[in-house]
Amino acid sequence: MKTESISLTLLVTAGLAVGASPASAQRWQVDLAGNSVKYDTAPNDTTRRIASASVAPLIEWNRRSVYATLSGAFAAFEASDWTSQGHGDLSWLFVPDRSLRLVRGEMVGSADGSVHSSGYRTAGTRGELRLHIAGTSTGFWVGATAGTGWTSSSSGVTTAVGPTAGVWGRRRSWTATAVWTPFRLSGAWFQQTEGRVTTSLGPVDATAYAGWRGAPDRISWGGGTISFWVARQAAVVLSGGSYASDLLQALPRGRYLSAGLRLSRDRPSLWAGSTARPLYTRAAGEAELRFSVAGASRVDLVADWTGWQPVSLERMPDGQWAVRVSLTSGVHRFNLVVDGGRWIVPAGVTAVDDGFGGHTGLLVVP
Image (cartoon, rainbow, N blue to C red; front, side, top):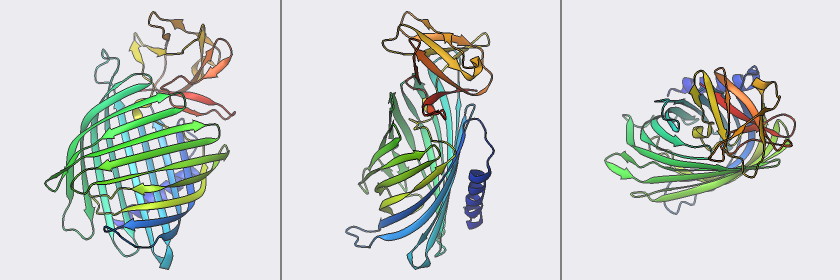
């Protein structure tokens, strides 16, 4: 990626973050932070920590069956050094065969790049094709992935290919994912596993992650982030840990501490991944929605397409609650009402802030 392209990515991201007009399931945020970073460039590296100040805008779309993010970061270090980075993700979730109710296909692509004040530049791309088997609260996928990397100090493009597999689960406010991505790079196979757990408890969002890469370099990493939402559109964010080296872009591993302020259009939902999008089936122009609600004797649905008036769900022989609805393509919001009182977002459904101190669920219809 050229330097101009990275700068343009940052400018476009910042412009969208500040000036984006409200749209269904669209969110922006900007992080302003102070950071301390130590790069591990060699065994027993004694390089001191480097302090920096950073600004990092992000914009996220979730429209129909497409999920996308565009983000950037600019960090100013000591001694007038600086670095800028850009990153984009795009995911398309589709139904390969409507007779297979739990099967979903997904195409994922990403691109990123960086430039340092010294003139060193990097770029990378990644593509994946996944086949998901997904229920309302758990699922797994298998697929294949390929990536490329380039640096201004190299004479060509580095490539990596391999299979991928993952599992995810969600229970109440907790979500978890585990991903296995072995890859072949420069004639050698690398085994790599990563995991992530997220939760939302009152005004606090928390994420913990860990990873391991096998021979020939054998490294591990991990860390976490805690966000304290002091207002609907503002949070104090504390994070720290370590991250892996990027073999495709020849970027070293490192350790970091960060504290800052997050300004956001809305509090983000903590995703287990794109597979956490609620599943549905179409029949004669209708969609059948099914939910598991333990211990309920009556369940109603309230939604933007019902004018937030309750619609009764039918209890099925397997214990699930079901209703048929006719929906237009797009992103819809809904809740379940349990026994005429408690409003909930069912397990396996992405929850977002409803603006009144609670949460509402998202239903994405292609």
